[in-house]
Amino acid sequence: MARMKFYCDAERCIECNACVTACKNEHEIPWGVNRRRVVTIKDGEQGERSLSVACMHCSDAPCAVVCPVDCFYTTEDGVVLHDKDICIGCGYCFYACPFGAPQFPENAAFSSRGKMDKCTFCAGGPEEDHSSDENKKYGRNRLSEGKLPLCAEMCSTKALLAGDANVLSDIYRKRVINRGASAMDWGVNFNKAKLGS
Amino acid sequence: MVEHSTVYPVHIFKTLSVLLLLVFLATLQQVYAEEKSEPQGVMIKDPGSDLWRQVRQRNVAISGVSQVKSVDANVLINPEADRWTRFRVGVLVKYASIILAGVALLLLVFYVIKGKMKVEHGLSGKMVHRFSDYERILHWTLAIIFLFLAITGLILLLGRTLLIPLFGHEFFSLLASSSKEGHNLFGPIFFASLVMMLIQFVKRNIYEKGDLTWLLKGGGIIGSSHVSGGFFNMGEKSWYWLVIIFGLVISISGFVLVTPSLGQGRIIMELSHVVHVIAAVVLIAVSFGHMYMGSIGTEGTPEGMRTGYVDISWAESHHDRWAKECHDKDLVISAEEYQRIMGGTVQANRSSDLAEENK
Image (cartoon, rainbow over the protein chains, first blue to last red):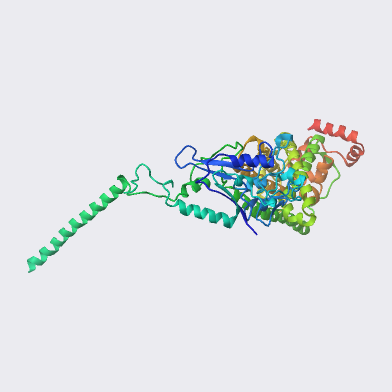
């Protein structure tokens, strides 16, 4: 079985936020909930890099460990999903997740937390595949159609990769090797480097 | 030869010292050159190191920005998340269970060994008014809310370990969901009753002169010596202040946890959770002691919070200074009078009002 992973290449991400928009549109996510976001480090400075981040589908997911009602499960593909019928909206997964993946829609009364929502790797939820119930709670189920997550599929610079971990690491390894000789690599002192000498 | 042999080493030293000086100067020059002159060719750092140091927030200030404007959206990795998780599932569940079960077991052992603490010369039947209706209603309101919050809180804390294997996921989810909602709903009411408790009882709970003696004598639990006390003794006062202070800490930290829309970050919430649960577990553990003392632990105590009246012998053995005051003010009523008052609620109220006025 495949082991599904996201990988975001910081050398390629141009912070276009298309992955964020695509995700929101594909799953019709409510206002205030962001399954994916792009974070830029050192914005406007030398060494600026952007990374697109969502649920990392951890092998030993802290959200699943800490959940008081034990609503998380890992699929055969290594995708971490949760059951919204079981979730009580306590927010513990939000405290436990280092990446800030779990999101909570605001409930009407006192704007308390509703049921948690997060990236599903476009794999739906525990309901029957392509059922309207699944669609309403978790959004589209692309994985069962043989398609990869939309955020990665439409990434214009192919910075965001999604798929089997082995395939992703092969792609990334090739990139790193080719990049080794590149003058675009950072750490290069362009002002003072005497290229060719 | 002798002359030559004495000169020869001096010559060597001279040469050596000149050489050393030259080497030293050369090194200096090299160091200086490395510092000041242009680098030879291209200098390549590990391309990832700076970035990942930023991402992991290791020894650098957070500099992330994001178009997503929710709280902490600009933080890629929260370094405290893992520590909190390990505390919650590793330390907390384990030690909370041990502490609570341990205290309950200790009290059981204590009861089996010592039994009910009797009043020294038996109950006299003569009663004295101790708590007004308002005070008793306040006490029981706070007590019931406290128990409700403790039970719902413990369901959320220990339910996954203890209850899911018994009831299954779906039923437990229902139970946990209602526990969470109930916990959040009654939290503010607990705070309100706590403030009323603070106002109503604060005067009588300020520590005074004889209290240290009470503590040194172990409150009469150890040994059988008579321990002096006022309206509230040292132990009751300490319980009161524990309830007030820990109750306030729990209320404030609970407020931080229950209002995510105020915009506090995850780290503040994680800290609040730790404070909230530690204070709660301590309070629940000590409340076991209070419940024990107030029910089966001591003879004559439950009546005070049930009817508002206590036996004068009970008062003499636990609160001698207050009992003396009651005698002086002639507040002690006979057994017949007490029976008459308890016979009808209206009369009881009238009588307790009288007693209140007399105080």
